[in-house]
Image (tube, rainbow, N blue to C red; front, side, top):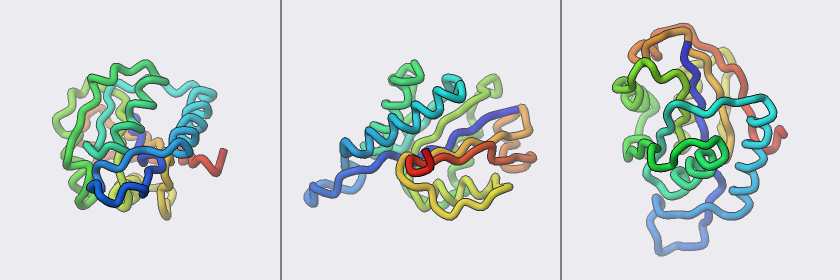
Length: 164
């Protein structure tokens, strides 16, 4: 069994029109909503992941670092990939194929619409849109990451800041 957490970045700032999209920072409201989600995850004994991977975009990486800090995951071990930033959801599978099968739990931090489409690959529940700081937890009935798109899977839970 593998567990996958699909996490959309926290709310970011649009106050800097002169910076590129991937450089937009988080706003305090986004950080607070992320902490609210993390409080809930702690209340249900969410384990520290074996692996975290994030888009290179500042807002996704900052969100991953907030999770890492709270879950005692070494921030320097976060795998950063530009391929998570933009592209079809099917390409996200490529991020997992090189993982060691000893890794049981992975958190991936990224962006819509890609993350919502990716979460819906595993869907026993259709997800319309993952909002900022939203988390989808997926159970994968496999022992190999290379089989994750072929195995039986189910969404264990889907939480949003507004649902808490």
